[in-house]
Length: 484
Image 1 (cartoon, helix red, strand yellow):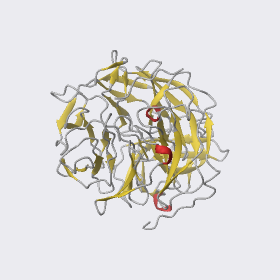
Image 2 (tube, one colour):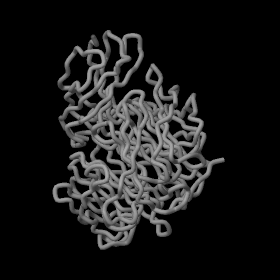
Image 3 (cartoon, rainbow, N blue to C red):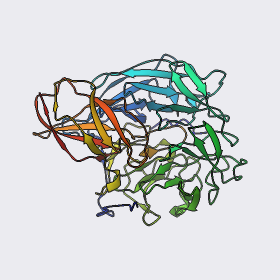
Image 4 (cartoon, rainbow, N blue to C red):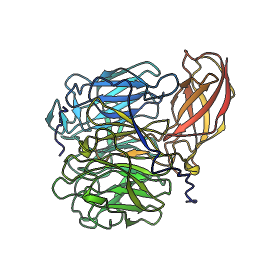
């Protein structure tokens, strides 16, 4: 259990240039003025951010990029409040594929007290300038806990929610309505996370001793039958015995999953063979004891490591799948004073990573140059003339949702960005995001073809624009369009 912290490939085609010196951290020019934790990428380019420890965890805030598309120079505004009495730490959170609705579920703490609450909230948010309006959302029938449980939106668009404290899970059907899913094969959901695979299945590494390979277990969820089954044994125990914690798991552009342990170990899973292999051992005994990770456009994984047991001493590192090695990268001002559990990553449409740590001192990581060619989304059908303020325009895309969820934490923070955003750049360099919604699929299988709808803001003036589709921080080629 985390404490409350009150702050004082196909060949992998990588262009990895200047990795030793190119990475930088830049503090936000305009701090939010409150402590920020969990963050959600909205479908209009804005970032929805939760006010957390040392502040008012009932409140949300919105970061809007400036007119050039810079999040470093972005501005903050009020994002709305959860229903009265619901003020969680360590909870599930997702934006639905319709782009307009957000679900916040559970919490290890509520109003600063450890209760593993079943409270939840269903939010509606207006695109471009609106904030969220939340109403209460009832838990699945008979559940006494949700707490700090994992959740995910599956390839078929369904929202799957685990119960933190037993083997149950359920599908969100509608506000205040759920349907039961199959129970896991192991002994407990607690502290485990979901990783979406190209097949549409879910991978979950166990954090308990189970019938699935003892202390080295992993499971797979089959969405066709809604059932769990043992997967394969990890090469070593990845969870710690005291807190049953785990680190993040990231599906990489080579099709393999990099799992960080809360022990001083990592592992790599190959879905096609259902096998695990040892990853690099972090230097200095460091671990991912509840920690964030993000898949960079250049194919490397940014991960926050630190000492075991929620202790301070963080170090940002890069995992290179081509060499199977971890190396130090530059730190933000928060390291080494932070423990890993306070860290949150949000993969921005610029290809940068936004970092929060329950303080108001957010920073943005700019990775080394390079893009994995197979991950670039491709526009396959588009109308070249649009009307001012038009809605429900249709765009066909290959690689609609990218090839990965993009970022991970573990059980109680879901920062994925595996859905399309649309960026419009005017001839004067100004950047505007459209509002995307109602995707035809949420699959991350290679070559996935699908459509998204998008609305244009009424503030966008007539003229010529370069239109880009962006997924997981990777941009398509530009298409020239005209707005009447």
